[in-house]
Length: 197
Image (cartoon, rainbow, N blue to C red; front, top):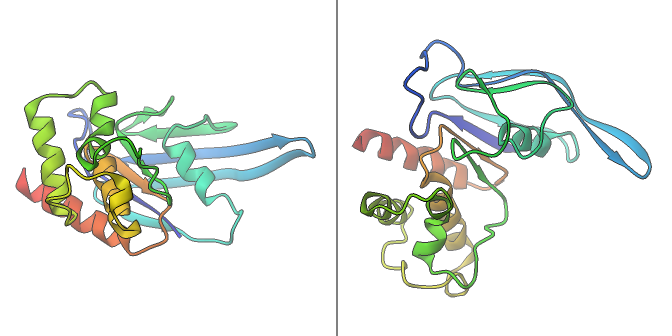
């Protein structure tokens, strides 16, 4: 199962609440290898509204992760259009959080620095941004671990650091390949954060 949630963070001011937050319009994707071409996604149509959470369910190899990668702008579709907030997705963006099944934490960075990695990449180093990282670590139950390193945490704790890192840039939507109960934590955490605004 792969999950997708819309309107977790800041939205574009020009957005209309009635139009879909995220859309796939006739999206197809083909993988080309030595043995030829393999159609992974065929003319998919999808509309996700504001505040909606959806799951993509299907057997291994049916294209679920490909769909999330297209939504995150990791590669362009072979056909069709991916829209976020009514605008074409043309590449990776801080507007889309993408949480992999593996935590992918950097072992030489502290928990605080791993959780704030997306902010660092975006050049967002203000005190308010740092405070957001601290608040997210508290929300996911990791207050007091900020100065530790990934090797000092359990696998579940590392996943929660990855969740904080995904939510730190305040994405408009979040995609997750996690097959665990962590998605419940994402929805609860994003709801509490939204209520604080």
